[in-house]
Image 1 (tube, rainbow, N blue to C red):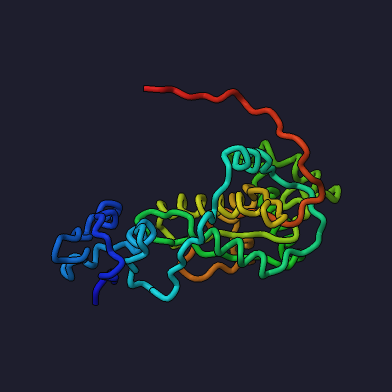
Image 2 (image 1 turned 90 degrees about the vertical axis):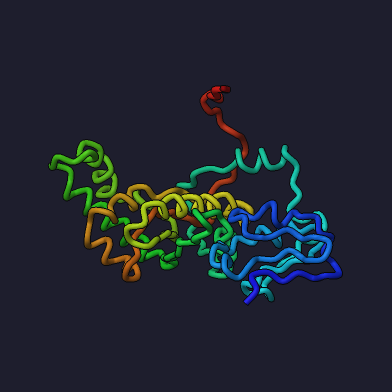
Length: 272
């Protein structure tokens, strides 16, 4: 079966599809032929879609679920550098939430955006577990504290750090998930260390897209660390067989609005 389908009437033989193919498997068009992927090397296609995405005449379709091809409307995705800069600088780690649940439809829409995040060789290894029930999120926070209790008097890198967190929890303050109504877990195939980076990139896409939907996020580092070491918490999450946690993120509707952009360290750049 052909890897790409090219419309003879629309193809201008510009050569862009051949040039942008990361695997370099598209033979360029000539006077008497259209761009083509030879059958003997078709298995090298990583299904990234560069060929059809960069085709200026909409002549090419990658034959992977071709009915799902989406042509960009004119002007779609255009944003000024100033607006983009403000949008990204306004992003905050949210630790105060209204408690109002985020509809599943909104979460699904955000995750649909995140699935377009880049991954090594377009492997797309990241899948998601969404804890939508606030009580389940609270239970994850409690089990994370239990993990902290188990390490506070041991030779553990975090043992000297957890006492204050445990004390705050015992005083009634959720210092783990911050009362967030939802928790997002990115999970990957076991033993695939490169997939960890793919998961972080995908979570960053979710993180940056969330404010556009009125959603605030915070990276759940304590939870991620606890899951790797504490079996009761791992069992609570119930990840599918053969999958392991890459990282976690709490999210919900922010209680407060952002009105200013705080300072950061001066930009550090070395030019060589």
